[in-house]
Image (cartoon, rainbow, N blue to C red; front, side, top):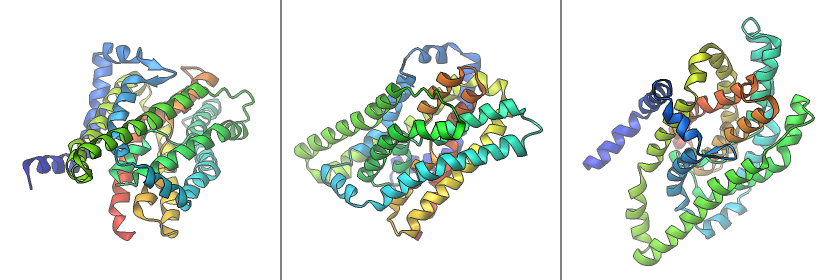
Length: 345
């Protein structure tokens, strides 16, 4: 084993500690060097942070380079994994999120949360539940060795369903008649996190294979990007937690209360989707991303809608922001669980 490989192994084995270290570093930067998050906040387009978008490109670009047109055609022919994604994301997750959040906010935590506050926290949770992930799914898929072409098809079709189903689901669960969905945020996210990196990855793949051959591309070129996903993920954490440091420090107790049902439903939705894929005897590289898409959230969309409906400083916006804060640590735990179960597929 080379020194480089040893470094990678050590880094991956201690990823949990790196994650918490970056979360702490982000909070400290936001608290003591507020100019950093304030400056980064200026670089936003339709509610999407440009620096985070760049880091997500860095994370998912290596995966997109593994995609070719033939593999995408084959992915479209295997519909079982797609059906699991669609059913879990639109027929199970939003309603299960509503039930779990209502149970905790109105019953279990009723001594700590007033009914009016609980109602808005519930609204934020529902917005998260109705918006399954678009961008970070590619990161979780990469970390579980997911099929890159199939993941692209899962995410692309999932985004089309969001366009049609998001408003009706939110209206039904919350009884809100004037749901304002910033479609610009949704469409821009699809362009930024699916179309552009996919096109770039395919162009890079074709160019390198044409010049150096497929063997060089797979055995040498791709390995040059091995650490990019992890590096991008950790830097993303620093940015997110620096931007939310005031929120974390001012509302630690309620953030913890909100995080409980969000975390619980994430684990259960993953178990449902991942378990269904295993029961249907799907290969691991399709089953793992199927579980990850349902478990994670399109938090940019959820936060944008919460702000549009209830205001920037609203409890609903706070609840969606807690979804941002819990996303990475919880999903990394699910990645570990999935990888440990790989031998059972």
